Length: 101
Image (cartoon, rainbow, N blue to C red; front, top):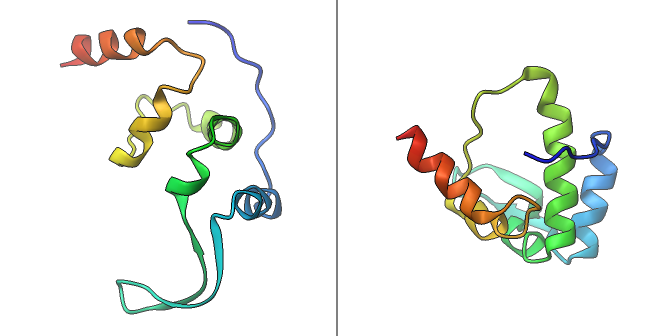
């Protein structure tokens, strides 16, 4: 696996800025499916449509989680489309999945 340059985790304002630039941060009043209310809503699918933004957010998240040394990372199906945009070859990911099962 190739070495990647680690970047520092993004602070919350920077993350919100990335979502705003993508038009993926809705602000107002929302009633969530849980019944709770929120003044903001993040549309992750919209921000992940752009590979550069998806890579920046993923790298920052990975950098922040690196100290935990996770053995595996799980994601909702939403992230599957963004997987193709990573620097890691798709075939390598498929091979690993088959070897793990």
